[in-house]
Image (tube, rainbow, N blue to C red; front, side, top):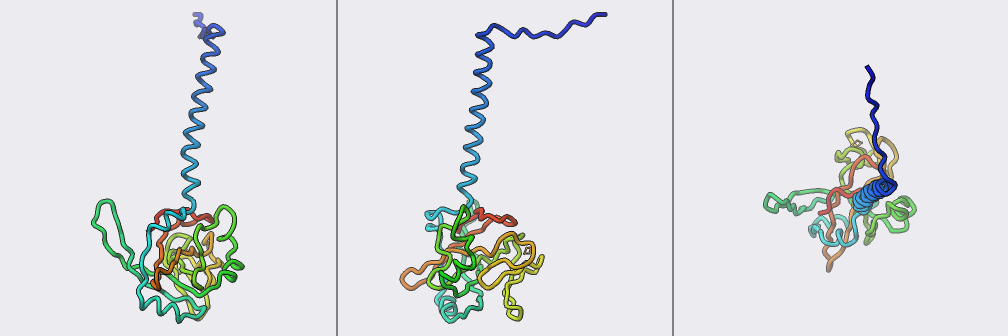
Length: 209
Ligand code: FES
């Protein structure tokens, strides 16, 4: 038995060109939508200066005084982070950061990646002679500690190691420690809490404040 051949009428030249136009229009629209998705993603790699400027947590006078007395050995600073959640009432949560004495020039020489290129942070990472580090390990988010006897930060989870100014020296972490913004308001110190995405060399913001 003969099979009927499947045949599709290609249509008149006008119909063909209308179809071509529709296909191109759909492709162009897809390109615009993709661009719309990509641009916000790129913009969110680092916080904008405005976003950082809206969220500050005070450091207590005691903790600030301790920092003034610090040497180039990092010290732990505790503070109350004001938590605002869309569902729960605002609450304060005790958090800590690491702080170290460092001059701008020293920091720039040892952590140049934070001052140039696409991953440049939009805030001073060494301010008033100090740098504040997020306590979150940039590998998978454990809390690392300063180990005095070895003169370095060590993460207990997978053994990443960092110098006193946060340069990555060993282990699986893909970048150095993340500095946080610090400012002085009439003699009172404040910092901004930023959580960056883990396990990537870039600074991609997950949360500010
Ligand atoms: Fe710190 Fe893996 S979480 S080394």
